[in-house]
Length: 137
Image 1: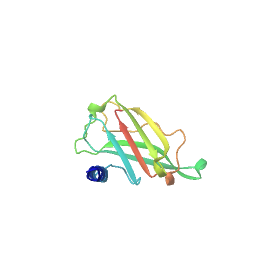
Image 2: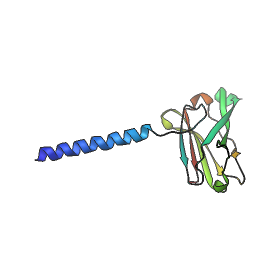
Image 3: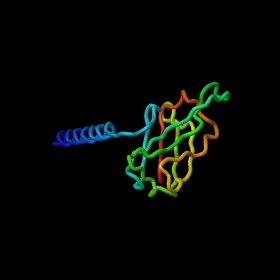
Image 4: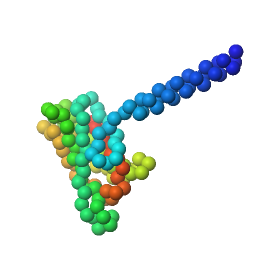
């Protein structure tokens, strides 16, 4: 009887892990050629947001660095009005999800896109593997 209980617990654990893997595989994040992304969006908008970035030659990194980012609403009728005044954070990610740089701010009123101030220490563009956007959190 104990063997059946143990087997039942093992099977239940495998099913739970398999379900978690299936859910993780179905997640979708938007990014612009950064390789991968994470998108955490509050209830202020259900629109897909795009994080794009600008690079410039930066002698301190010995090549091109990400100097600015722009967050834009890609919906046919962009609507960020409900997000106005909410905080946001954009983090550029490197290998293993390490933070390479971060910018924060508040969503401006009447915006369909916005650009925060640039990075204090612009990360090398070649090191960027992903982007994380937290809006309203």
